[in-house]
Amino acid sequence: MNINNVFEVLYFQVTEHLDTLESVQSLGALLDDMDDTAGAKALYEHALKGREKALGPQDTQTLNTVYS
Image (cartoon, rainbow, N blue to C red; front, side):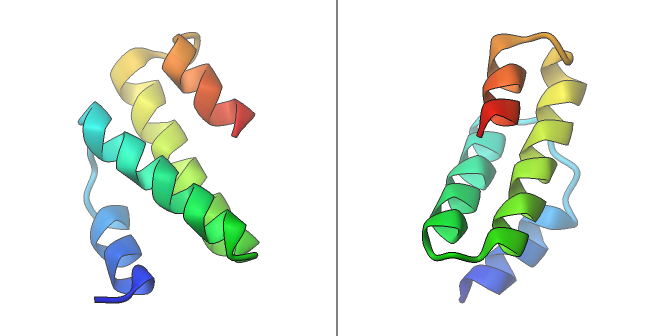
């Protein structure tokens, strides 16, 4: 399974599970390191939306996602 397939599975699942969102953010960092800024941005945004929904926009974890 390549990274695009992983992204598709994660992207189409609405999740508020914090461990899953951490994994999504980590994959975003990996793509960013590989100079795939578009892919990284999509994963960061997915992690941000999930954390905003689960924790609220002012939570430390949510704000850390914005910082990424």
